[in-house]
Image 1 (tube, rainbow, N blue to C red):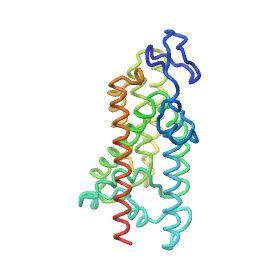
Image 2 (tube, rainbow, N blue to C red):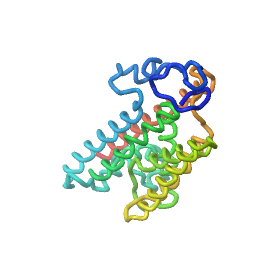
Image 3 (cartoon, one colour):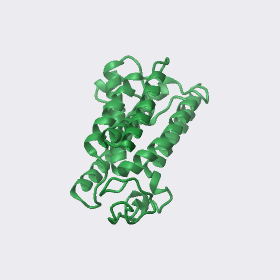
Image 4 (spheres, rainbow, N blue to C red):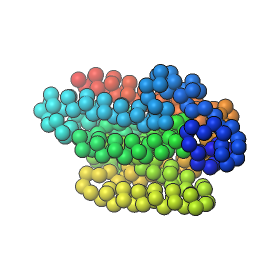
Length: 268
């Protein structure tokens, strides 16, 4: 999206064909995290691929741990998920706040992670392209945290995990894009993602699905994206604030996983 006139353009355009303003270089040439990793992850999907990598890495670790504890290879036992940072309201109330972060990167089985990964691969790239990497990461993490907080209040008696709270946050962000842009393109975007939200909420009625996390995620994603808007000129004060916010979210995630490791080490 052109940061000047908000028209949709391709990633190859260096001058917007609609307003003739110069467009900044892609993220991989601006010294961001993608460039720091040598361009191994495509800049158009940098956050999306990174999140998928973390999710699958944790899935493999928890699967091995669950199998050693007598569980099966396709379904991870609940105690393993709690040990590795699932949302568990009594533990959160006791001070383990970091579970609100770590729960969003854990999955309960092969089908669970494959379904969420399938949605994230497409939806994450769309949000990242429209909102930029910094906003996308903030929306993703904050939506996940808010979703599991609502879940902890609404359903305190059961553990919960999964990327779906964050995915609903990304759906909310795309709905916000359609609401902000009162034109035929905005109406099309709004209609499509409202349908996604409806289908997802209907799916949430199935046994074992955490509807509370979905509701909290989509509300947080919509509100945050509506206030955030789309990227402006690179280097502006607003963009620097969002870059800083994204790095604060990275720090929060790192600290949360460190706390999880320390708590796990004490239990083990």
